[in-house]
Image 1 (tube, one colour):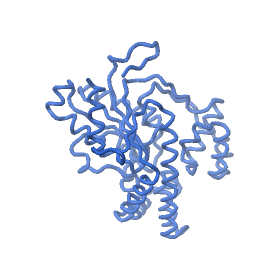
Image 2 (cartoon, helix red, strand yellow):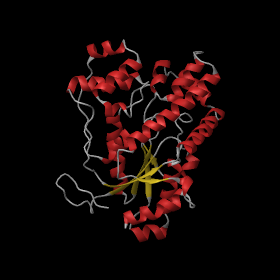
Image 3 (cartoon, one colour):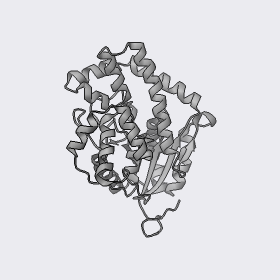
Image 4 (cartoon, helix red, strand yellow):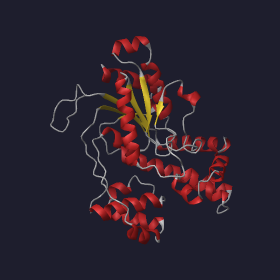
Length: 325
């Protein structure tokens, strides 16, 4: 696989990175771990001249400590001994921006490469994936306090409509209920006069991108089962515990769908059944937005596990081996 850098040079000698991406409930984490395990076998390491693999999470909520059940965070047991990076690196009481994520994630990539290992980026936050693999800089836009105060008077729906008009591309992927992110996006546009951010398509690495995609009906069923499992495993108690530890209800609204609507239930704004139904509908919409973001990229090799006889790992491993050879 050849790509060109800034000057059109061949990327054959550029460090290699594998990306596993897809919507919620698609099985990205397990595929990433399975690939890393296979790449750690002595015979495979000798054949491909690598020293195994480590994983970097590209999930905007898994960066936060304590957001375990609601974010679908992989457990220590599920990691099977494979080192994972960019998980539990921030306090949920504070904001952890994509700029901060990019800084630490790229450092993790380079550290993994320095060990002679393959970095495998696994996640469903397309913006975070792009921040690692592309030579992507973010506009330095300091807080515009007067502008922010004006926007704070608007509800999320009104802010989202403004963003759709000013930056339709960013609006496709943003959480339209997250006022903090909406305000920040509009603030950057106000300061720079441009959509945010302009994503360079210059690669930092030689990248293989594998996408996991299911038919809508199958994904819908997987989302339903996963949501029910999270509720059974104590997601409501997790949100209650976070609030008791000092995470405000306002902050909970910014931490994603599960934390927003479970907190609404705990505040008695909606019933338990309303919470479950709303979550199910909103997670499906979010998965659709994820796919809208990913489908712009024609380099992604898509795997539909429901249409193949072998497991996703058996399907993907030969592709990864060829890429590394």
